[in-house]
Amino acid sequence: MAKTYSFDVSAPANSAAPSGGAAAIRLLKNAIHERMDLDLYWEKSGDTADVDDIGYHRKATLLVQSSAPTQKSDAGIVYTKDVSGKAELFFRDEDGDEVQLTSGGAINVSAAFASTDFILTALSTKTGWTDVTTTYAGKYLRIGATALATGGNSTHTHTGPSHTHTYSGTTGAPSGTTDKYSGANQVAVYNHTHSYSGTTVAGGTGNTGAANLDPVYVDVRMFQKD
Image (cartoon, rainbow, N blue to C red; front, side):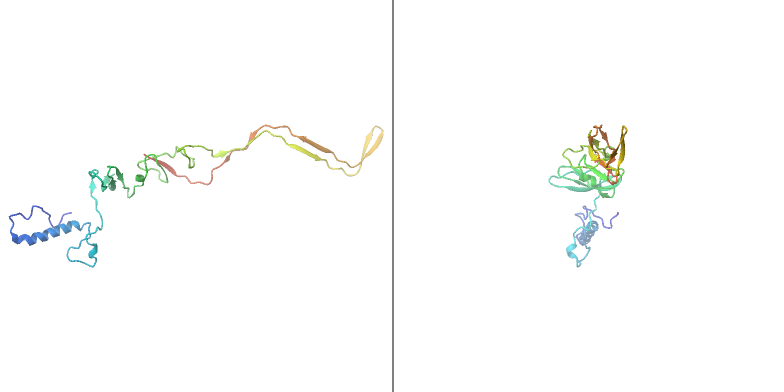
């Protein structure tokens, strides 16, 4: 936006009349204040009750850079650059490593992850990440020494080994008497029991029906950092 007070380092000229010095000084003050007051808290005239706040930043306006600024040793640089037509915040460390701190109106969470890291999310797409949901679909997370190792089953069966059963017991005693014929003779048979025992024949092996082991769950997508 246009400024009310011009800032011209070539004025006043050496040949200017001394009588214009006061006006030139006021012009310089106004020009400096007009520019510095954009971000700094700076009263234009006089001291107010909050004089201790004068000179401190109200905000920091960072103009969009076309490329990362030149690095200075033993220093970090904060600046903005356009990403997809939007000004985003960046940081560059003393080694020249550039980190994008914001993305699409939010903190750039991707900056906190290294390449090949994983995240779980409800998003269907994520810039800078590869969707690996299909690769690991239906698997649960487990802490282990070998990263990305897989195993286990979602169902199980029980195998029955070949085995036998022993049995034994006594028959019940009938009531009363029973006539038994032996040739021409009739003999009375009184109440009695019979004992019995044995072992079943060994059978074959078999499996129970497969049972599902999945607890109640909610699906999310998995992305891997590019």
